[in-house]
Image 1 (cartoon, rainbow, N blue to C red):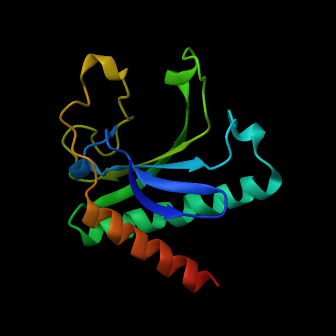
Image 2 (cartoon, rainbow, N blue to C red):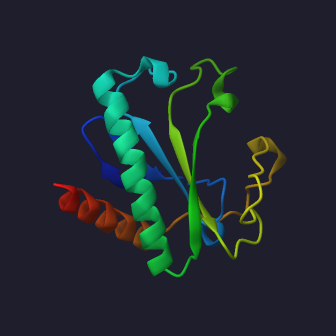
Image 3 (cartoon, rainbow, N blue to C red):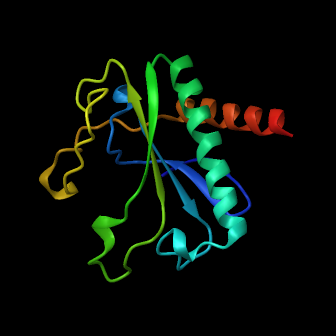
Length: 150
């Protein structure tokens, strides 16, 4: 994972093996720092509020930053799933996926439902993750939004 931001209760990272290749919009994940949270029902009221605010801030920052970096983001998809982990020994753990949806996307086409097959079939093998400069730009935008909010 490529670190982007840390809040009181969550971390924000770009996926090393994304579900959406960089030029199709990129992939960011928000994870709770506290262990053992299976889904939203395990959040405290404070954590739930922070998570909602953080998804909004990160989504806005991701769209602004990636458009600046030449990726024509039209929208952000937010997904809370955990389906691939339910049969693993460690089980599911809450995490929120933010998927950039580029208007010029070639694989995960803009306006279409996302295609998310199991990793084992190789669909994602050649997907390019967001890079260090993308992460830095998203971080700058997050910091700017948070500063302006205060």
